[in-house]
Image 1 (tube, helix red, strand yellow):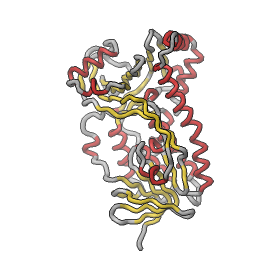
Image 2: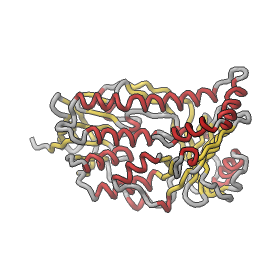
Image 3: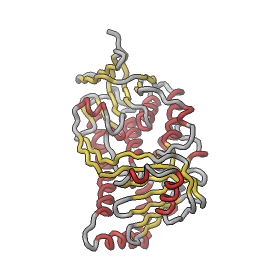
Length: 382
């Protein structure tokens, strides 16, 4: 039987999978990237994408090293943050507090994906289309069978296929999945007043609202709420008014640019992210609450660190290397998951006196310059 043999096969051509395939190919590895169908570039760049990411400075450098940082004409810069509690608490910090040019950059999913796939098509990565049907591993290799009967063999197979990972399911890796009982509602708006490069966030008790500065006079909204239908059923004009009013009219009137969409919020912690000849990255390996905007940053660091680890590896699927990757990533991922989950729980709690305490904590931190500088450095550290 004919089969194709690789050093690494990446299943999933989204942001994290595409960046990992590129990084490995630049290290001279024979890499294949499997995606059900290749993205349509015209569709990728048409209109505005309601799904955006806050890309950290470290991950911008990683993408630039791959030749995959997109044009700045559609990229917003977060120069400062303004976070407000549910009872008057407030903290503000800026990139200057961390001696940086920006805290992060707001990039649309489609815009960034298009840049990555342009680089992929100019690379040595073998781009495969199809659906995986079966996965088997031996101590020597992983074997992937596609829906058209092709059999692929590889030293290492990487699952970069999202929160509902098929690869993770095939491995039988159980995952602790904790639903938040909320959805993240996203949409983009043109705003009447300049946003000034400020990312704004409000904790409303049950809900969390974020306005993220996009290119030009536009913002992207992420509203974490248990009542997403009330937002999704609004007309574009009604949605614009509701979102502008929720932020106290700080940026004047809004105009809706993209229809509202919602996705369920879950904390996913698999029992492990490596198995015999297989590794998981990105949302297949972990998810976090979006209140800190760090999900994709954790994923890009999965890719960057795994590629660096395999740079000189004679066998990319060596079990000791995979265990080392799991140990390297465990602390950063667990810290981010714990931090986001704890902050979410803190503002959800209704114990007597707690609203005053958490808002007083925000305001006190705002007056402590050294602590603010540390928060700013942490904000750009992934």
